[in-house]
Length: 122
Image (cartoon, rainbow, N blue to C red; front, side):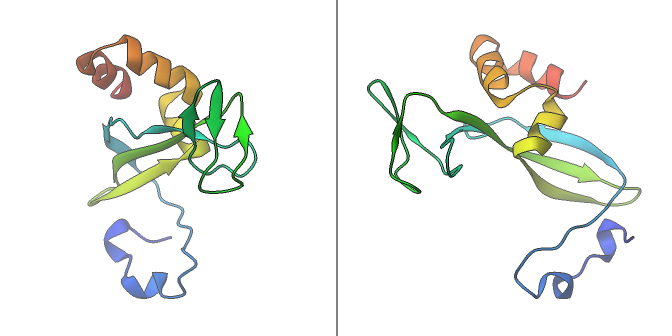
């Protein structure tokens, strides 16, 4: 196991990404309009809303009446001495917020930014 400060560009040289097991905490979450997006139930690519449903234009190019709501949260993660910007996709976003993407999207639409910030920092 390494600390965040020990991660080097060479660790990511293969282009396939690396998996790290780190211990720390999320110190800040940055709510944005893009932290939950409409995703294709089939290929998980971003969808566009059309009358009566959603179209997957970037993936399978199919039309669906419903979609999945998928997380792409931006946050700051800290270990014992350093911090790094991270993205919490899909299930990781759900673990961080404690609710499914669709529920979080609705929560954001019915609360102001201060209430959202307070909830995320609990």
